[in-house]
Image (cartoon, rainbow, N blue to C red; front, side):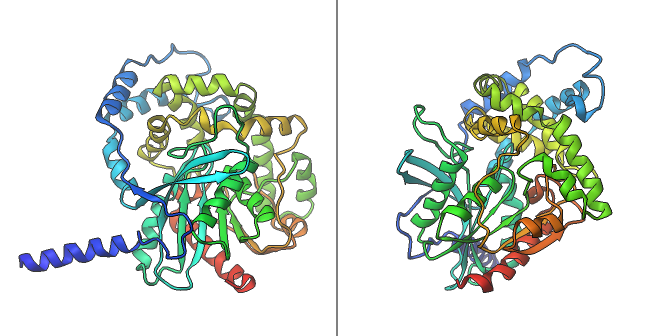
Length: 420
């Protein structure tokens, strides 16, 4: 009996370890590590949180209205739940997959330390896939998707090498010297070089949402190795394009366009704050965990599909990761450019390939999107489009099964066109 238990135990861990095997073609081998926040830091966090004051009641903070931010009542309840939150449980989930650290060399930024988690396949023709998060998300959004992949495939049958990094200056990744400004364009160069260093120079596919979608689009336009891409976030270049989209929109899309118009008018004030007061908002959020929760938490909730709400534990884990990695101030580098673009009524237009095949999945509660007819007009290289029945801005963690289905369906459509 005991021997059978041991055999089962070792079989399980051998299967898990198989996903850790770095492909033989790697150019620069990353170093695997185990992530753990020191006990001193977790105790310090709980002390700061317990001593954090919640402001007095006002007309504004006693209303449950997304248009004026989260309510005082929500913050009181969230603080209480956060005091009881088990960070070690989240750490265990993070470490259930292999985590790696590597140094990426960039001609302008110099050496940048990059973290990523991965599921490496042992299948000879596995397709390299990099999946990129946004703000206020992180790589942990993709952990449910990685779990689904492990349930669905063994390392021998997994059709992809799945690389999930922390974007430069997000989470566990570093950035350039403080004397150099990081941009979405330079972040795209670093992510592309990461894939090249891993030995995927013959070709890979990129996937992105939010900030990750801008990085993905730039990679599609600037990297020969990025052969195709998939997006779950694709805004118009300007809100002035909304009337053009409305002309050929379906009834469902017309309602979505109305929500997008409202978001542009009242839901995007955070963008101007983070783009115009980048220094001070970063310092404020880094000074107190409750301040960080008050700023990030209501946005995660408002941008998700409220018909299928995220658990408060999930929201707290997302914010907690920002706190424990001290990355709030570092991760706002996209917003100065976004704020300047907003001053021109633009939504940060970036270079995007019009030749490489890509798929686009629209989740119904996404803040910004393109209608199908307009996307087909603007992007003749779009080979897959689907409008999903549920989900919002954080699709990978909100609806991991649907998200994975969309990515894999899109990959099937593009793979026959890219020859890898």
